[in-house]
Image 1 (cartoon, protein in one colour):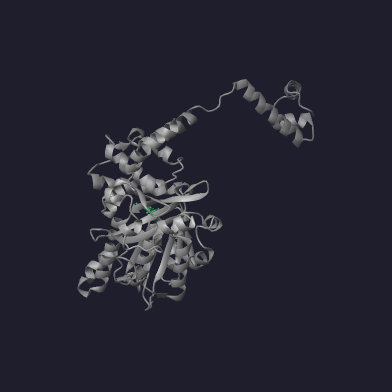
Image 2: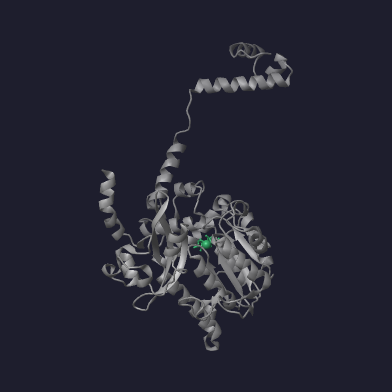
Length: 468
Ligand SMILES: Nc1ncnc2c1ncn2[C@@H]1O[C@H](COP(=O)(O)OP(=O)(O)O)[C@@H](O)[C@H]1O
Ligand SMILES: [Mg+2]
């Protein structure tokens, strides 16, 4: 029953998925094409179904077609980036996962799921192009200052607890060095701020500061962004400098470097070791003088243990390593941070909030802040938006924080209550036992210490059944 329902509805389901889906039989004939795939390829499904895949995609060969190689070898191909020209002549870039379809261990076809990353790719490359233009054009020097520069200084890093003062002192003292810096710490602790501040205090401050986040960007795209490409090296490739070339003389900041694939980490290591980059598809090499700063959001030992960072790369990048403490290790900074963010958002939102209600302040000093300063900042921004009086009170907090606030409060309001006499008796027994131990069992002396008559003590020893 469920089976037939499933079969009837599966086509409908596939039509509504916003990824391209192709199903091909073991002879390479297209048997299914969803709407999204048709849009991507600019092919009419009616024309394509029943025809061989190479007939529809003339730019492919039996060797380069992922579908055909999966049908041949039966080995899935995961997250493979491909660029091709569709029927309108537009270069489309997709990330494909291709899986064999088997029946009784025999390959009867393959399904390919394609995610369109053309826009992401175009936009990322546009950013690189703009950066390149700014850096290379003499007349645009002033604009370049604004575009390719770190914006934060040490003064922007709020914090006066010992931990923060020590961190800022250490960071300042290494800012002039050309050695790589790795900043690690939980998300939202201000790692990015620190990296900016170090660059801005270094001798490279008037040179480019190029930042790239390494998470959520496909491997091959990141590779071409970092190292550059030459025209014709693959479909749609243009002559383009990589970020290493653009950062020459300055700082290249690789945020969340542990998100990079191990393969790319190896390539990165080679470039850093040799100070030489080669654009993808080029034979020419360029010498680059770049200071590398990185961040990782996990404990380095953990990242090494679960192999999200290669150890050879890690040791290279963490010549100088700085730990950003989580907010729960520096509650002392919370009042100052609150004041800072209240002023910031008063200005931005044209409000006049004077402070935080006492019970909310208390809550802030006991909450664990898993999102760290970013969480605190957004909590204050949200509260200022809806606060009605002069203060931020618990009802103006973001909803999820109100829930935690209420839970904490009810826990505090209900201390475990036991009958008074029971508690007093227990305390008496403990005190008497302690006094007797100190006097070696001498009741008279113990009574003197406890400042009670000897008879009273005798009575209580009997009452509590204390062994002398
Ligand atoms: N010490 C600080 N003083 C002021 N603002 C801070 C501080 N640390 C972090 N922030 C703010 O918190 C947010 C997160 O900081 P960010 O550097 O992006 O964190 P991370 O890179 O560690 O995730 C940013 O909006 C930043 O301005
Ligand atoms: Mg960050």
